Length: 625
Image (cartoon, rainbow, N blue to C red; front, side, top):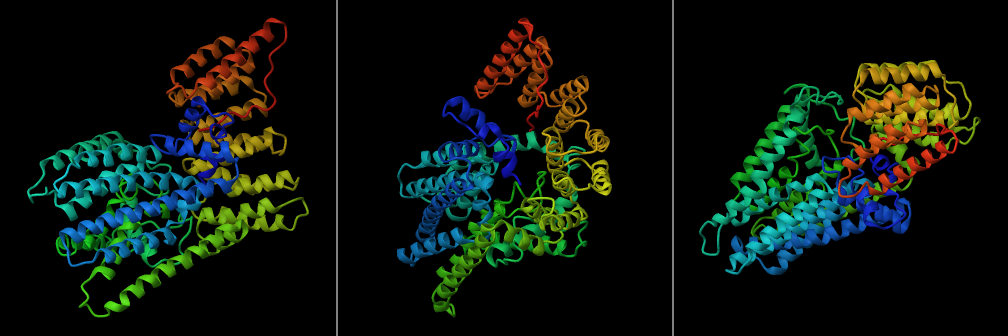
């Protein structure tokens, strides 16, 4: 999934020299979010530079980050419970609150729903952002405790929210929720009070500057994009269906977090059924009522059970970006990495800190230990599934038979095992991929897989595979997976590994470009095909110019055009385009690219002046974004 475009196929991450320019190029090489998530991207580049491209080092780093976050969760929990003991329950012993913090942090580190934020490599973006969020919350709590003691601590609130918040956002945009978490803590535990019990007006000013103003600016920037006509054209659901479905998703998150089911938890939830109306399915309305009741409980219990209130609000606050209007996929488990902490805090504080007179008080610690053991056991099962690609693919497809990704993943893993035209895995792979191709809302990856493995093994290619692929491309906007599939087909043909019917390939690419005329990646793929397969340099350049014009602020397309024009001997055009790349150079991250392009142009001119003709390279595969 996202590991490939962000890491595996991202040339900027594969650095060979450790310098400012290479790190900047890596930092801004991802387009996963509006800010490019530069901090996370730098860590991927450093992983590869020091330890090579092995997944092992990437996962070890993720686990170390998760371990660090576990310590921060304990620190945050301990500080929250210190505030609770000081303001609401002075009868509690310090050891009781500490053991509650230990139990909460242990359960959170072992929580099965948090596995994908750790072992799905690219979701280091989530866990690293969580590191800075947790550090900022810890500073905020420490500062507020100092203020309640009559000491200076207001500067720590700023230090916790602003610098830590910036770092969190640079790792992943979800870090923008740090002031939301802080506000929830302030409202439930501190009540905006000073040491003398009066309201501290500085806190209102703080939240106006770090939360209200950025939220207004963010909505003004991103809101129109989310509400624009056609914003959801690339999704199988509409904005209305998303808003109807998310309440069910969020209640499922609560269930999957606290009472995990190993047969439901998965990397793949693209088979989650949409809500079409309040009663289709009926659970849509029930979910909305359930969320309303939970929020009402949080408000009602704010003074009597502030930790319960805090935990509920913390969880829902953590869903504000991913569970509302923003054009994201409906369901991902890693979105609960920090929100799940609120659920555990609400549950464990209720179980461990309730007054002793409550019946079965002696059994409550045993229940907590049992839950932690359950979480550890299910997480261990999931780890074992992830440890073997074949086992993982078989289990995922069996448990999610209506998931386009899970069913394609099974066919893909069988395709990888094919080692010749007589391989016993070839018919198994074909059967699995043909099954994946007819799953509802499937993209063209299954057809691509069928074409690739059979062409590589010089086996017959069915016309029906081309036909179903063309039908999908003609009837809906191309997804990133569709674009990736077309790139793989063209690359296989250009490299000489595959031999496809040229008319079929041209028809498929024409269909894709006609349905998606503004997709710069598709235009780039067509340019590559036109140059290296059709040997039509004019058409190739026309497509590449269109790609650059459709994405004028993306340097990669101008870089592609420069390299094409140098190869075609259009030196004046290439010089102008190099200047365009220079204009787009942010923070010097394209300096090395500009130097390379200028050097290549100079060498080509020298060859031309010496009578050596410049020829189009046999394998010209432009990079995509």
